[in-house]
Amino acid sequence: MADSCLSLLHDSEANQLGSLFQRHYDAAFADYFSRDPAKWPVFSEPGLNRIHQFRQQKLAPNERIAGYPDGLALQQQLAGHASISQQRQVPNGMPDDMLTFAAALSKDWENPSSVENVVTMPCDPAIYGSMMGAMANPNLAYSEYAGMADQLEKYVIRQIANQVGYDPEQSTGIFTQGGTFCNLYGYLLGLRKSLPTALQHGMGRVPDFRIINSQGGHYSNMTNLSLLGVDIKDKTIRIKVTDSHDMDYQDLERQLRACFAVNCRVPTIMITMGTTDTFAVDRIKPVYELRNRLCEEYEVEVAPHIHVDAAVGWSMIFFLDYDFARNPLDINPVTLAGIERTISRVKELKYADSFTVDFHKWGYVPYTSSLVMIKNKQDMKALENEPENFSYFEHDLQGQTHLQSTIECSRGAVGVFGAYAALKYMGIEGYQTILAHCLQNANYFRHQLLKQGNVKLMAPENQGPSVGFRIYNPQWVDDVVAEFAKEQQCMTHPEYMELLRRNSQWHRNAFKGRGKVGLYTNWVEFISRSAYNTAGKYSYIPGEKAVFMNPATGRSQIDLFMRHYC
Image 1 (cartoon, rainbow, N blue to C red):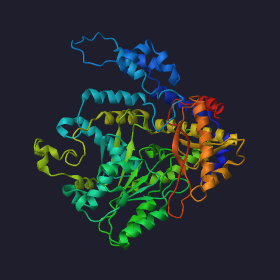
Image 2: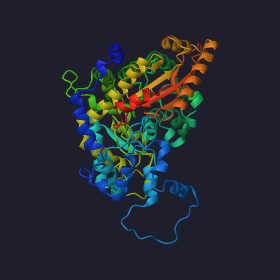
Image 3: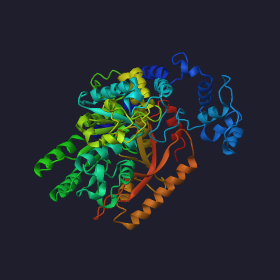
Image 4: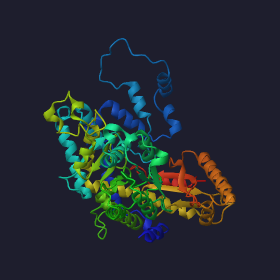
């Protein structure tokens, strides 16, 4: 299937935009991303309307302040002396100039050129829902402070459980502050199950253990360990990744065996569904089967908790039941093949013990809206603190929420209300349409880059929204595949390390010289890796990336970028 995707990337016809799909997309964009007051009256509010009208100009970043009425003066005011007004001010029904300016001049994710990272504009229904949540102001930590918002959270959790194949009666979840917190819960669940004494005595008095994660995972997979007091140097094992940036399952088995052979506990195995820069999707079922097999072989009493960081890739669950044979949305051939390949992995999400959902990424919900899904609700018992710590809450009501098990004492419900509204109005078909639009853009971009002859795509078989690439000086390099192969050997050939530096600096200069044209891409220091040396060490290979999550982005922005790409 991967070979089919790669061959179709070179095929112009396979990358065409179908007229039927275009009609689906146009309707979905108008319904969910147009800020149309006739459909969503909230956008008739003068301040919101002013922000939208300004952003409709689609100004480049260096034009925005000057393009805003009195923008320079307002900027100077924001940067100047700040004190709280002594006198109260009577509202007059007009927008506040400073608030409107700050909102309008925040990062413009509505600009069709904005493709820097795994962030995008929120959809209209999610904005509407989030504003309702903000107005109601419930605290999900405690049922009496949450009211019906607690039931809304449970409802959304059951929706996601049903979609991925969890038992909605046996699973649970927690809306929390971002994907980092979700992954923190993933670690905590494993630590508390495998090392229960740590709840009261900390990490200094526990049996020997190792946390396992992937070298290709998000940086929060490491910063969370520091927060938890884990000795990162001596208690963490980072599994190697393949050329596609997937977890190396042979290395995982070697490391697990080494731990279990000496009775070293493994509380958590952290894997990834959609890495930030190249959208690598780890297989979950092989990890699940390996864990169970080795636990039986070594008589391990508490199996490692498998947590999936699916903050980026979770949205692909909307294609789990798509009819690929009939293709009702008329998705083009290369993208259809890519989605089908990804779905073969995403359907294994049901084997995870827990996973991260960031609605505020590819779910088009405002910040923050993150959910950690937990397959077995009994796992939450391992996180429970002593009841006497909660003496100022009514005893009979404490068990109605996860009060004693959560990290936060304050869990806002804005993310829940936004997620509910997005799921209700966009539905599976709406999500399929917008996601397929983004993926078709990504493949069209890959297709255009490949035509140039001096661009190397990073892991193009990972058919997600993230497109990583390196551009080479055509006067120096005739064969980018051979050149990249040399760069990958830089850890064992010093002359290739110098080659890597030279090519990277040329690309970096081209990136900076191009500026913001067509697509606002991003420079990253780890777009790929070198081959491992005999000690298992590797070097970062830098490059450029574009992440096609923006529903407003179209082929005209891609074509403009390609006219100035180097």
